[in-house]
Image 1 (tube, rainbow, N blue to C red):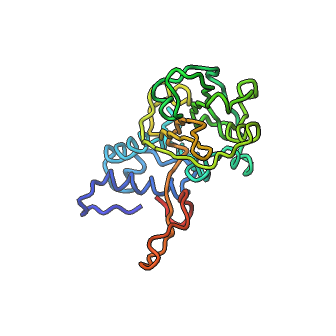
Image 2 (cartoon, rainbow, N blue to C red; image 1 turned 45 degrees about the vertical axis):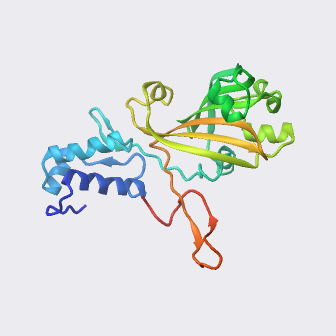
Image 3 (cartoon, rainbow, N blue to C red; image 1 turned 90 degrees about the vertical axis):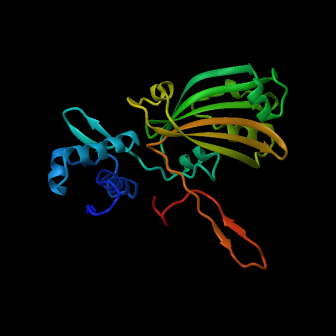
Length: 263
């Protein structure tokens, strides 16, 4: 690592950025041990306070963790799964051999409040299917998922094994419809104490909250809220388009940024 002492950018910030880049591009993979604060300070001719400030920032981002009496380690596990382009990405993870399980927190039939009713184009108080679960990928609690489904499309879903079920696949197979459109809103968040407890996190870290409506033609069938822990997920967009003015701007591809550009 090389720091520019003449730059107006603070040294702690330069150091944090360089370590972050090495974590995100895989040069420092999950589980890698970082140098101790005194050792790195001596190597880079920095004060220990500067190194501590850089490490503190990486801890707050959920990229590294300190283990008392053991050292500082990379805790970020990069995901290669397309969580933007593929709404039913659990099926895609199955295909790639990821180990999945879920713990059911709540399930049943409930009355839609105004927010959910608006998403599903229903009258408030309409009975709908509901469940909440925490999903683990390769034994890491990663996603809190809250699902609301129009009752006429749910069938016997609640009597099925919700710990392994894909509601997307279930609805298509049992209701004879295709969920052929979805719209999604994504918010960056700091996980609150309840979410940290469910995801087995000792400290609050950044995350993402996804709000997704799945449609069959012009009928909203499912409203799905998901909370992703930020140390396992990265988001990006890739656009390929034609700048030929005669044809206008045409988007050819939309999805998760993969290998060409690293954050």
